[in-house]
Amino acid sequence: MNSLLQDDIILDCRAEKIFYSDFLAVRDSHVPIRKNQITGFIGPSGCGKSTVLRSINRMNDLIRGFKFFGSVQFHSMDIYDKKVDPVAVRRNIGMVFQQPNPFAMSIYENVAFGLRLNRFKGNMDEQVEKALRGGALWDEVKDKLKKSGLSLSGGQQQRLCIARAIATGPQVLLMDEPCSALDPIATRQIEELMLQLKERFTVCIVTHNMQQAQRVADQTAFFSVDISVGGRTGYLVEMGATKELFSNPQEQLTKEYLHGDFS
Amino acid sequence: MNETKNNLLQLPNLERHPFEPRALKSILLSTITVICAILACVPLFSVLVMLIYRGGSRINLELFTALPPTAFQFDGGGISNAIIGTLFMVGIAALITIPFGVLAAIYLAEFGPYSKIATIARFSAKTMSGLPSIIAGVFAYAIMVITMGSYSAWAGGVALAVLMLPTILLTAEETIKMVPKRMKEAAFGMGCTPSQSMTKVVLPMALPGIITGVVLAVARAAGETAPLLFTAIFSEYALEPNDPTASLAVLIYNYSNSTSENQLELAWAASLVLVVLVFILNMVSRWIGSRTRK
Ligand SMILES: Nc1ncnc2c1ncn2[C@@H]1O[C@H](COP(=O)(O)OP(=O)(O)OP(=O)(O)O)[C@@H](O)[C@H]1O
Ligand SMILES: [Mg+2]
Image (cartoon, rainbow over all chains, first blue to last red; front, side, top):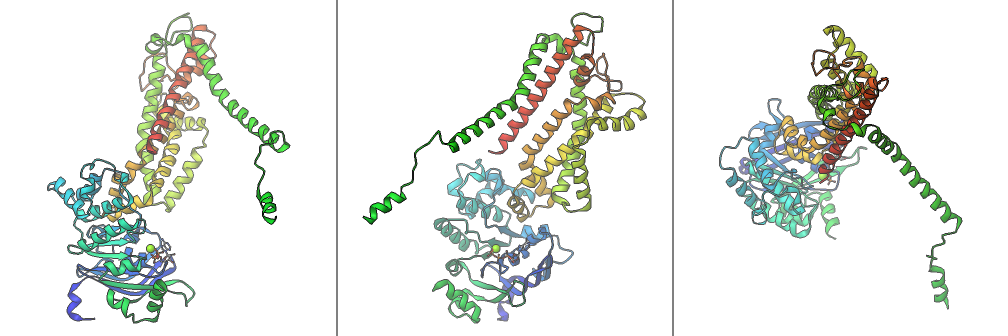
């Protein structure tokens, strides 16, 4: 890889082995994530895309039996270092989930929630508005901020979750199939939003939609499942600039997967 | 030709045949279920009717304000001390068990669901929820009455607390567990610590369910007699928490054997008050429960 670009790497995830109890879910996957770019994770179901993504902000710590071997360098710190507080990691690396999951409180409170967690002292109204604008939701909800977050449509809920995640100013946003519960129009809105977000944040997105990966991702990582050893272990097959990967894949497996999808 | 034949074959017979054996059997079975459902309502309503019939005449202001009559007083008197005593002892029990039970439930549901302590606590709570109430009385007698040297409202409260704790613990654990996983994930994804996720997201959602469990436990405790016989017994005087204390349940138990017509009537009236109290508590818990589902 070009050494000049090394500086751009904000997160360097080296997942040597990831276990759920004694099941080896992912092996040997080195995923460097570049600043202010969108990195797409693609691959067949069960290949460990979510597992790797959730390892990047230690969301998997909540799962019993989860074990991570390797390192995730974030600003010259390994987030799996014993000294690191996983709560602090999650405050800097935000997450948006497959199912929109606003809290059962008002739209305003959903966004203010993270700010209050961080003991935000400034002008709360202003900050909430800024985040909702950042989430491309402000115009739709500005007259009903007191309404429950659960009263919004699925696409609006997902944008609320994005607004909630960016309100506290994280550096990285992880999104696990953020559009798979949404219709094509809402999906387009979220995609446009992502392209805006990358000016200020670094984004990682898991997607099953090849067109979506091509539309939004600067870098794409292709994962696959290795069934040769008896288990079903996922691993990174190849990673590179999206255009490059789609037009000229280096590995036979990638070629087959991309072709299977298009022909 | 072929088409008509096919059509005839395909057209199913959709008419009703009410006198076929199959239809008759079905009618018979559904009638039996309706009758059983009606019969299931009979006990509650006949108890209510009887209580209103026998005790209704004494429902007046004096009942709620006056102290019980002596055996030789032929009319008048009330059950104010028993009502206050019941509320006081149930109140003590609630004050002990609510913080205790809910905090323990948080541990069982969230922080250490698979730990040894949690397994043991859950098992003992399940066993305790079937504990005969008289055992709770004997237990509180041993640890409170003997050490303090007197029957007291405090001892009564502790006996009721022993009975209430498992119900509160188990229902609170269930409702905390029922908060959807994606809500907890959202909280952790925002960078909540486990305790922030609990207090800001999980508990507010579980609260109505927890309150329902508390109210049901209180309703059950309010009607318990056996544990109070060993701990608070009875008194004809106003509440004095360090001394024997009257309660509705024990008043009913004592006066229902009385030879005094006046005391017998009061026993009926007290029963009515107790049933109405339990009834109201149940309504409150259902009302809170129905608000959750919105
Ligand atoms: N909580 C868990 N406990 C045990 N095994 C798990 C758990 N989560 C995932 N796995 C296993 O790890 C492997 C990778 O799962 P993962 O969810 O990362 O796949 P994925 O690539 O995200 O798939 P999909 O595209 O279907 O979302 C699978 O074999 C799965 O069964
Ligand atoms: Mg997944």
